[in-house]
Image (cartoon, rainbow, N blue to C red; front, top):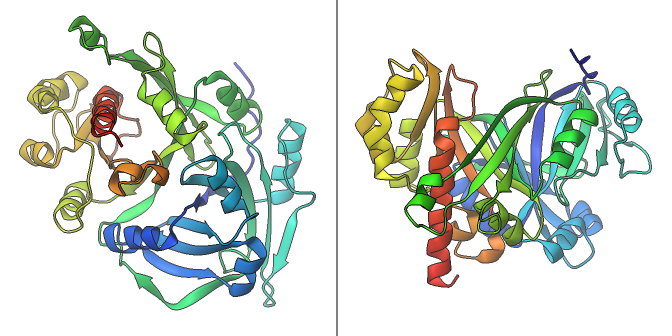
Length: 390
């Protein structure tokens, strides 16, 4: 049995940093449609120094930092020269930054900063961080240690009162982060040997029945979920499989993203049925469609999976197109996937990223029974986009 790798001391995914072309459009999306609160923004000095204007949005423990270029040369500008809008940095809160740095360097991690960045708030609070490169395309990982330092980052100016939403949908935390690659092996090895993560779950499938029907768009994938047992942070990772590797929605994402990287964030909620109903009817959010056959077969599949009792009505799940999966009598999970940002905003440069909404009722898995339904739904949406010529 392999000896466990020493933990980096990650406490949680603290925040996710986006690079966007239109901060006002994103502000409306998060505060009006997703009901996030806007906590504050970058100071004029930070905006000028970093050549990007930033705002911070939060719902529950989900914290998102969004930056739009101001002129040329800043990190957001450099990202958007190569990619559509997307996740540029994942920030991890750690217990002991010196230990984290020591372990990463010993394992071959590539540190970007010449030295650890250190700040104090003038009230005794301190903040330290450094960043590393990753196999996740141009996305970097930042490790942060806080000791009584309240602001999210130096130069962050909090609004006197948070603006925008009140989190009426009940977002709780980031459940997992999903990324797409043309090849998984380098990422899996890096996550194991550099980050110290372990394999949590994996699946492989192909839409064989679509091929048998003569449908030329049937494709497949392989997926491996890596996790940090210390913090529970999970990264789900996909690669295309043959035949029809190039037609796979995983490969299409990489082409649309112009590189490998983060495909979606799964946001956990406390009541998915009420949340999705409100998102659809009140806020006009659009989700990927689910084949009607999924719900026709659902009662039989629940019995086969060992789920004997659920709290929701099957008619509600069908009406809202929420997916369900699990393996025990009264332990299961519910999930649904929004359309890609490019489809929501009708702008290809908004990017192929999307959000998943998930509710866990005792099940810790990743919806293996739903993977294929999601895969086919994404391919249908992509085919519809191609047909419209967008």
